Amino acid sequence: MAVNSPVNTGCFQLVGTISVAFGCPFEGRVDAGVVAGDVDRFLELGVSHVALGDTIGAATPRNVKELLKGISELKNLVPIAHFHDTRGTGLVNYVAAYEAGVRHFDSSFGGVGGHPAKLKYGGGFTGNVCTEDLVNLFESMGIDTGIDLDGLLATAELCEKALGRELYGRVTRSGLNPLLA
Image (cartoon, rainbow, N blue to C red; front, top):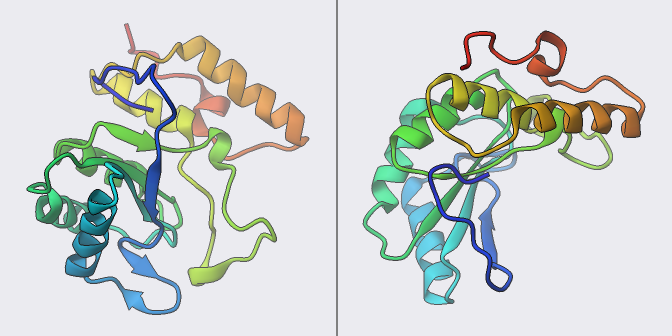
């Protein structure tokens, strides 16, 4: 999802991914300087869109802003925020990323994702932040996502039917924020 950003209608876009930009299940805390170096290497290869992942859900709004401040000077970088909700901080980390200038966000319907074998590495739940919850939050904040909200909920419900189980989206259960215009 890109907010307040034109849609790329040209050729495919190559995206680099740093899956453990904030914390690693094997090495622990990830040095922001190492991440900046990895981002710089992507840029040298001509890859301008770089996803910064929080695979184990260890990021906090503070270190999200610190990391993004450290790479903000890199020319031609289009950062993409990708957070997991392992410790209930996924949505606030997206807000921190937005406040730090990020306009591209990666999430999944119902939080589907994580390890295909349902391995709970990193000490817990491996699910992504729910797209429907993220869009509802941004729209509630007055951030235009350009996403059809009714279609969004219908798609989340379709995902549940296809997978044969209730997913993790809160607004799929409660409905969109009733104060949205």
